[in-house]
Image 1: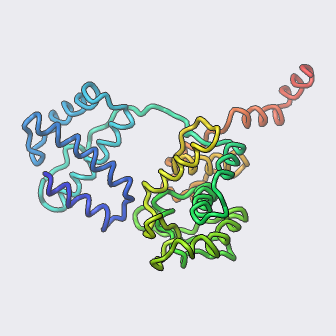
Image 2: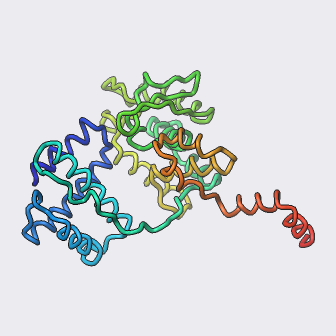
Image 3: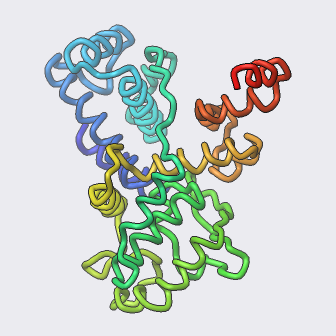
Length: 302
Protein backbone atom coordinates (compact mmCIF):
# COMPACT_ATOMS: atom_id res chain seq x y z
CA UNK A 1 0.00 0.00 0.00
CA UNK A 2 2.86 2.40 0.76
CA UNK A 3 3.90 2.62 -2.88
CA UNK A 4 0.32 3.31 -3.99
CA UNK A 5 -0.08 5.99 -1.33
CA UNK A 6 3.15 7.68 -2.39
CA UNK A 7 2.10 7.70 -6.05
CA UNK A 8 -1.36 8.97 -5.10
CA UNK A 9 0.06 11.88 -3.08
CA UNK A 10 2.40 12.77 -5.95
CA UNK A 11 -0.60 12.78 -8.25
CA UNK A 12 -2.39 15.22 -5.94
CA UNK A 13 0.62 17.50 -5.83
CA UNK A 14 1.87 17.51 -9.40
CA UNK A 15 -1.23 16.67 -11.43
CA UNK A 16 -4.09 18.10 -9.41
CA UNK A 17 -2.25 20.99 -7.78
CA UNK A 18 -3.43 20.29 -4.22
CA UNK A 19 -1.86 22.47 -1.51
CA UNK A 20 0.90 21.10 0.71
CA UNK A 21 -1.42 21.40 3.71
CA UNK A 22 -4.16 19.34 2.05
CA UNK A 23 -1.66 16.70 0.93
CA UNK A 24 -0.33 16.44 4.49
CA UNK A 25 -3.89 15.93 5.77
CA UNK A 26 -4.46 13.16 3.19
CA UNK A 27 -1.20 11.51 4.20
CA UNK A 28 -2.15 11.52 7.89
CA UNK A 29 -5.59 10.06 7.14
CA UNK A 30 -4.09 7.32 4.97
CA UNK A 31 -1.56 6.50 7.71
CA UNK A 32 -4.42 5.96 10.19
CA UNK A 33 -6.16 3.72 7.66
CA UNK A 34 -2.99 1.73 7.05
CA UNK A 35 -2.54 1.19 10.79
CA UNK A 36 -6.07 -0.18 11.00
CA UNK A 37 -5.55 -2.54 8.06
CA UNK A 38 -2.32 -3.81 9.55
CA UNK A 39 -3.94 -4.49 12.92
CA UNK A 40 -6.88 -6.32 11.33
CA UNK A 41 -4.66 -8.08 8.78
CA UNK A 42 -6.65 -6.73 5.83
CA UNK A 43 -5.55 -6.24 2.23
CA UNK A 44 -6.37 -2.70 1.06
CA UNK A 45 -7.27 -4.07 -2.39
CA UNK A 46 -9.91 -6.43 -0.96
CA UNK A 47 -11.60 -4.32 1.70
CA UNK A 48 -15.36 -4.88 1.97
CA UNK A 49 -18.24 -2.75 3.24
CA UNK A 50 -18.33 -4.53 6.63
CA UNK A 51 -14.62 -3.82 7.08
CA UNK A 52 -15.32 -0.14 6.53
CA UNK A 53 -18.07 -0.15 9.16
CA UNK A 54 -15.55 -1.61 11.57
CA UNK A 55 -13.10 1.12 10.54
CA UNK A 56 -15.69 3.76 11.42
CA UNK A 57 -16.03 2.32 14.93
CA UNK A 58 -12.24 2.31 15.17
CA UNK A 59 -12.07 6.02 14.35
CA UNK A 60 -14.87 6.94 16.72
CA UNK A 61 -14.26 4.69 19.72
CA UNK A 62 -10.52 4.03 19.70
CA UNK A 63 -9.06 7.09 17.99
CA UNK A 64 -11.68 9.39 19.55
CA UNK A 65 -11.93 11.36 16.31
CA UNK A 66 -14.53 14.12 15.96
CA UNK A 67 -17.25 13.70 13.37
CA UNK A 68 -15.71 16.37 11.16
CA UNK A 69 -12.35 14.55 11.23
CA UNK A 70 -14.01 11.23 10.40
CA UNK A 71 -15.79 12.80 7.42
CA UNK A 72 -12.51 14.26 6.19
CA UNK A 73 -10.82 10.88 6.60
CA UNK A 74 -13.53 9.12 4.61
CA UNK A 75 -13.33 11.76 1.89
CA UNK A 76 -9.57 11.21 1.61
CA UNK A 77 -10.07 7.44 1.31
CA UNK A 78 -12.85 7.88 -1.23
CA UNK A 79 -10.48 9.94 -3.38
CA UNK A 80 -7.67 7.43 -2.85
CA UNK A 81 -9.76 4.49 -4.04
CA UNK A 82 -10.99 6.43 -7.05
CA UNK A 83 -7.34 6.88 -7.95
CA UNK A 84 -6.69 3.14 -7.45
CA UNK A 85 -9.52 2.34 -9.86
CA UNK A 86 -8.04 4.60 -12.56
CA UNK A 87 -4.72 2.76 -12.14
CA UNK A 88 -6.52 -0.61 -12.26
CA UNK A 89 -5.17 -1.54 -8.84
CA UNK A 90 -8.67 -2.18 -7.52
CA UNK A 91 -11.99 -2.75 -9.24
CA UNK A 92 -14.32 -0.93 -6.85
CA UNK A 93 -14.44 1.83 -4.26
CA UNK A 94 -15.77 0.51 -0.92
CA UNK A 95 -16.18 4.10 0.36
CA UNK A 96 -18.30 5.40 -2.48
CA UNK A 97 -21.71 4.84 -0.86
CA UNK A 98 -20.64 5.26 2.75
CA UNK A 99 -22.06 8.26 4.58
CA UNK A 100 -19.99 9.71 7.37
CA UNK A 101 -21.41 10.83 10.72
CA UNK A 102 -23.25 14.13 10.92
CA UNK A 103 -20.76 16.97 11.29
CA UNK A 104 -20.79 19.19 14.32
CA UNK A 105 -22.22 22.58 13.40
CA UNK A 106 -19.73 25.30 14.24
CA UNK A 107 -19.73 28.92 13.27
CA UNK A 108 -16.51 30.03 11.56
CA UNK A 109 -14.20 31.90 13.92
CA UNK A 110 -13.19 35.38 12.84
CA UNK A 111 -11.60 38.60 14.04
CA UNK A 112 -13.42 41.81 14.92
CA UNK A 113 -12.20 45.03 13.28
CA UNK A 114 -10.36 46.24 16.41
CA UNK A 115 -8.62 42.88 16.74
CA UNK A 116 -7.36 43.12 13.17
CA UNK A 117 -5.90 46.53 13.94
CA UNK A 118 -3.93 44.98 16.81
CA UNK A 119 -2.51 42.37 14.45
CA UNK A 120 -1.61 44.94 11.78
CA UNK A 121 0.35 47.05 14.30
CA UNK A 122 2.76 44.24 15.23
CA UNK A 123 5.10 43.98 12.19
CA UNK A 124 7.93 46.54 12.04
CA UNK A 125 7.63 48.31 8.69
CA UNK A 126 11.27 49.44 8.84
CA UNK A 127 12.36 45.80 8.64
CA UNK A 128 12.15 43.69 5.41
CA UNK A 129 10.56 40.76 7.26
CA UNK A 130 8.20 43.14 9.04
CA UNK A 131 7.07 44.52 5.69
CA UNK A 132 6.57 41.00 4.37
CA UNK A 133 4.62 39.91 7.45
CA UNK A 134 2.35 42.95 7.34
CA UNK A 135 1.70 42.28 3.65
CA UNK A 136 0.78 38.68 4.45
CA UNK A 137 -1.81 39.89 6.97
CA UNK A 138 -3.15 42.54 4.60
CA UNK A 139 -3.40 40.19 1.62
CA UNK A 140 -5.07 37.36 3.52
CA UNK A 141 -7.67 39.74 4.90
CA UNK A 142 -8.09 41.90 1.77
CA UNK A 143 -8.57 38.99 -0.63
CA UNK A 144 -9.81 36.03 1.42
CA UNK A 145 -7.45 33.79 -0.52
CA UNK A 146 -6.27 30.40 0.72
CA UNK A 147 -2.76 30.12 2.16
CA UNK A 148 -1.68 27.89 -0.73
CA UNK A 149 -2.81 30.59 -3.15
CA UNK A 150 -0.96 33.24 -1.15
CA UNK A 151 2.45 31.58 -1.21
CA UNK A 152 2.09 30.88 -4.93
CA UNK A 153 1.61 34.53 -5.91
CA UNK A 154 4.13 35.65 -8.53
CA UNK A 155 5.03 39.31 -8.88
CA UNK A 156 4.14 39.25 -12.58
CA UNK A 157 0.58 38.22 -11.73
CA UNK A 158 -0.06 41.42 -9.75
CA UNK A 159 -1.66 44.44 -11.40
CA UNK A 160 -0.98 47.24 -8.94
CA UNK A 161 -2.89 49.93 -10.84
CA UNK A 162 -6.09 47.88 -10.98
CA UNK A 163 -5.57 46.29 -7.55
CA UNK A 164 -5.90 42.73 -8.83
CA UNK A 165 -3.99 39.46 -8.61
CA UNK A 166 -4.29 36.47 -10.92
CA UNK A 167 -4.20 33.44 -8.66
CA UNK A 168 -4.30 29.71 -9.24
CA UNK A 169 -6.94 28.11 -7.07
CA UNK A 170 -8.13 24.59 -6.40
CA UNK A 171 -8.17 22.27 -9.39
CA UNK A 172 -5.79 24.54 -11.33
CA UNK A 173 -8.59 27.07 -11.84
CA UNK A 174 -7.53 30.66 -12.30
CA UNK A 175 -9.46 33.60 -10.88
CA UNK A 176 -8.93 37.30 -10.33
CA UNK A 177 -8.93 38.56 -6.76
CA UNK A 178 -8.94 42.18 -5.65
CA UNK A 179 -7.14 44.20 -2.98
CA UNK A 180 -7.69 47.72 -1.69
CA UNK A 181 -5.62 50.80 -0.84
CA UNK A 182 -4.34 49.57 2.54
CA UNK A 183 -2.89 46.41 1.01
CA UNK A 184 -1.63 48.40 -1.99
CA UNK A 185 0.38 50.78 0.20
CA UNK A 186 2.12 47.92 2.01
CA UNK A 187 2.66 46.06 -1.26
CA UNK A 188 4.43 49.06 -2.80
CA UNK A 189 6.59 49.53 0.29
CA UNK A 190 7.57 45.86 0.28
CA UNK A 191 8.33 45.72 -3.46
CA UNK A 192 10.44 48.88 -3.32
CA UNK A 193 12.36 47.93 -0.20
CA UNK A 194 12.00 44.61 1.68
CA UNK A 195 11.45 42.41 -1.36
CA UNK A 196 14.66 43.63 -3.03
CA UNK A 197 16.63 42.86 0.13
CA UNK A 198 15.11 39.41 0.67
CA UNK A 199 15.00 38.18 -2.93
CA UNK A 200 18.71 37.45 -3.34
CA UNK A 201 18.02 34.52 -5.66
CA UNK A 202 15.79 36.53 -8.03
CA UNK A 203 12.74 34.36 -7.43
CA UNK A 204 9.49 35.11 -9.22
CA UNK A 205 7.41 34.60 -6.08
CA UNK A 206 6.19 37.50 -3.95
CA UNK A 207 6.82 36.03 -0.51
CA UNK A 208 10.38 34.98 0.42
CA UNK A 209 11.55 33.24 3.60
CA UNK A 210 14.70 33.78 5.66
CA UNK A 211 16.53 31.18 3.56
CA UNK A 212 15.90 33.33 0.47
CA UNK A 213 13.60 30.67 -0.99
CA UNK A 214 9.83 30.61 -1.57
CA UNK A 215 7.83 30.98 1.63
CA UNK A 216 5.86 27.82 2.52
CA UNK A 217 2.37 27.38 3.92
CA UNK A 218 3.90 26.18 7.19
CA UNK A 219 6.07 29.29 7.20
CA UNK A 220 2.98 31.52 6.94
CA UNK A 221 1.33 29.71 9.87
CA UNK A 222 4.47 30.17 11.98
CA UNK A 223 4.57 33.87 11.10
CA UNK A 224 0.93 34.36 12.12
CA UNK A 225 1.48 32.50 15.39
CA UNK A 226 4.43 34.75 16.20
CA UNK A 227 2.44 37.87 15.33
CA UNK A 228 -0.49 37.08 17.62
CA UNK A 229 1.90 36.37 20.50
CA UNK A 230 2.87 40.04 20.35
CA UNK A 231 -0.75 41.12 20.97
CA UNK A 232 -3.13 40.87 23.92
CA UNK A 233 -5.49 38.69 21.89
CA UNK A 234 -6.31 35.27 23.30
CA UNK A 235 -7.66 33.92 20.01
CA UNK A 236 -6.01 31.24 17.92
CA UNK A 237 -4.93 32.46 14.48
CA UNK A 238 -4.63 30.72 11.13
CA UNK A 239 -4.68 31.76 7.47
CA UNK A 240 -8.16 30.29 7.14
CA UNK A 241 -9.40 32.35 10.08
CA UNK A 242 -8.49 35.48 8.13
CA UNK A 243 -10.40 34.01 5.18
CA UNK A 244 -13.38 33.56 7.52
CA UNK A 245 -12.96 37.16 8.64
CA UNK A 246 -12.91 38.44 5.04
CA UNK A 247 -16.16 36.64 4.20
CA UNK A 248 -17.90 37.55 7.46
CA UNK A 249 -17.08 41.25 7.18
CA UNK A 250 -18.28 41.35 3.57
CA UNK A 251 -21.62 39.82 4.54
CA UNK A 252 -21.97 42.03 7.59
CA UNK A 253 -21.52 45.08 5.38
CA UNK A 254 -24.30 43.95 3.04
CA UNK A 255 -22.47 42.02 0.32
CA UNK A 256 -24.63 39.33 -1.31
CA UNK A 257 -23.63 35.70 -0.86
CA UNK A 258 -23.21 35.01 -4.59
CA UNK A 259 -20.54 37.71 -4.79
CA UNK A 260 -18.81 36.30 -1.71
CA UNK A 261 -18.87 32.88 -3.38
CA UNK A 262 -17.04 34.26 -6.42
CA UNK A 263 -14.52 36.19 -4.34
CA UNK A 264 -13.69 33.09 -2.28
CA UNK A 265 -13.38 30.90 -5.36
CA UNK A 266 -16.03 28.40 -4.23
CA UNK A 267 -17.50 26.19 -6.94
CA UNK A 268 -20.69 25.57 -4.99
CA UNK A 269 -22.85 28.06 -3.11
CA UNK A 270 -23.24 25.43 -0.38
CA UNK A 271 -19.55 25.82 0.47
CA UNK A 272 -20.15 29.52 1.06
CA UNK A 273 -23.17 28.76 3.24
CA UNK A 274 -21.07 28.49 6.40
CA UNK A 275 -20.35 32.21 6.11
CA UNK A 276 -23.98 33.29 6.23
CA UNK A 277 -23.73 33.72 9.98
CA UNK A 278 -23.43 37.30 11.16
CA UNK A 279 -22.28 38.72 14.45
CA UNK A 280 -24.75 39.04 17.32
CA UNK A 281 -24.17 42.78 17.43
CA UNK A 282 -24.86 43.08 13.71
CA UNK A 283 -28.13 41.15 14.05
CA UNK A 284 -29.12 43.33 16.98
CA UNK A 285 -28.50 46.50 14.98
CA UNK A 286 -30.40 45.17 11.97
CA UNK A 287 -33.35 44.24 14.16
CA UNK A 288 -33.59 47.53 16.05
CA UNK A 289 -33.03 49.63 12.95
CA UNK A 290 -35.53 47.85 10.73
CA UNK A 291 -38.33 46.26 12.76
CA UNK A 292 -41.01 48.88 13.62
CA UNK A 293 -42.11 47.51 16.98
CA UNK A 294 -38.51 46.95 17.97
CA UNK A 295 -37.90 50.66 17.40
CA UNK A 296 -40.90 51.50 19.58
CA UNK A 297 -39.74 49.23 22.38
CA UNK A 298 -36.26 50.61 22.12
CA UNK A 299 -37.57 54.16 22.58
CA UNK A 300 -39.62 53.11 25.60
CA UNK A 301 -36.54 51.63 27.23
CA UNK A 302 -34.69 54.92 26.67
